[in-house]
Amino acid sequence: SFHCFALLWLCLMRVCVRACVCVYIHRFLVCPQVSGELDDCHCDVESIDRFNNELLFPKLQALLQTDYFRFYKVNLNKPCPFWTSGSHCGLRDCTVKPCSPNEVPEGIRTEARNKVTELDKCEKSEALGAVDVSLSDETREALKNWTKHDDEAQRFCLLDDEWCPDSQYVDLLLNPERFTGYKGPEAWKIWTSIYEENCFKPFTVKRPLSPLYSSGRSEGQCVEKRAFYRLISGLHASISIHLSARYLLSDEWFEKRWGPNVSEFRSRFDSELTQGEGPKRLRNLYFLFLIELRALVKALPVVKEGSFKLFTGQPQEDCRNKERLLDLLHTARSFPLHFNETSLFAGDETEAAKLKEDVRLAFMNISRIMDCVECFKCRLWGKLQTQGLGTALKILFSELPSSPPSSRLTLNRQELVALVNAIGRISTSIKELQNFRELLAEDT
Image (cartoon, rainbow, N blue to C red):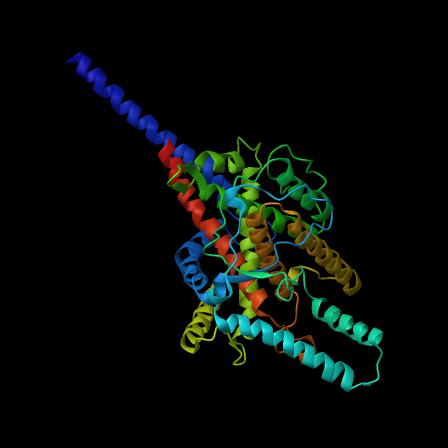
């Protein structure tokens, strides 16, 4: 009986120890990485988790399944403007399957063609006929360049793929973002270029040996540059979560199996394995979420206008899509702890304007770096998400419809599709964090 009692006692102790370890892991390994208030804003992680996972995420996923938001036009063959690329990635999972013409709704293709035609007509009738029909070819070209410059003055990223003859439509649902095997020196060359040259990296952050960078605050760094750095770090963290959540677990000749890789996730975000950097990376992810969420809210007056259409050529579906989009934007507006963008680029107008232009050009440069990514699928999602973030920044620091028509905010289809898909990716990352919490607890 003594042996039975001892054995029972040992079993109970083992269960208690295991439970304590689970609680410890849940509270001190994962939760500190995604809890509490965020820097530079009056919001906490727990509020974002509840709002995103219960309200925003389901509506975003439903909207992203629609034809209007699933087809994205992109040029994946642009050469790298910064260095000579040795070769494109030869891995199977790096390939992107473009759409054939009959796979894209006619309304989307027609809308793009009509825009090109109308732009050409407008340039001829207004820029030329209204001024002087005898203008030289050089002057006509200059007028076109001025018009393009005025149109792009408020943009934070390149948006030339929509008009490029080499661009093709891609069905994002058939080319999901996931682990492709693209890694090593060529992949890190991209991130090194982004962080070291374009991202206002704090002086306290040294060249890293681990995959991601710190979000540490350095004395004397202004809030705008710190915010810009955190956005890029948050984007990097989000991409890392996507790759960890849709990792290639097995590759048999008849089947591939994708799913969450807890070890990969821990290698990027565990506090001990990243020398304390993992929590900062995830906090930057939440900061990025707040920025893009705020952009959705500020886009609401534009989308509400009767002239704003989500045109695919299917009237009933187009009407439902606009209703879904408006519902999403109203849901975004209901979040009580929005980021206050007026805290950025404030103070002296001249200095603020210069700082804004520095940030805009830095982000523009990052959008160009995306054409140096050798994995086509990584390039696709990198271009889409940087364009989405660039569109969010444009919305936050542009004028709204209540302003004079000359400074009114406008959004074309390319920008809207990129914006909604970009916040869809961030929303998915936050949702995946909940799944990784549960998996980490089970592992213990």
